[in-house]
Amino acid sequence: MPSSPGRFLNSIQTRGIRDTANLVLDRALQQTVARLSRSARNPSLGDLHRAAEAVCGTTEGVLQTIFPAVSPTETASLRVEYEQLQVDLMGRYKALENQFSFPERSALEDNSAFLLHAVCRLSKPANVLETGVANGHSTFFLLQALQ
Image (cartoon, rainbow, N blue to C red; front, side, top):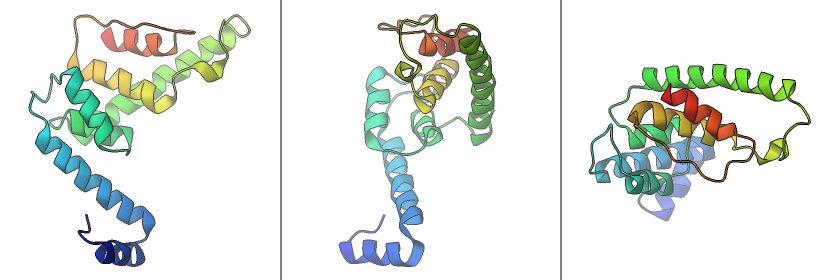
């Protein structure tokens, strides 16, 4: 990450806003990984919370921060698995149209749902407690991850 305002502006001019932002996020992720103290496969709730606050980047980047031992190939495989489950869930939504208590917009957004699913798959918890469900969007992905 550029260390001074002048270097930061020069980086934006040289690399562009997107590449500079990616550089800043990459460095922030690296620093966050260095601060995580627990096992890469069993982060505490506090570790997850700190990692989520540390950067605003891609979901895959957050997963890499939380689980540094997980390869990009494994993360990509989880994304494919999630997308297949998402197609299944959308089919179920369509079949049950107009039978839900909450509007579709109340569902958990895609990246957060993927993050829940992936964290559950990677950490392999014995139990998951979820409260405040609406139409069961996040519940579907958590239950599929537990299978």
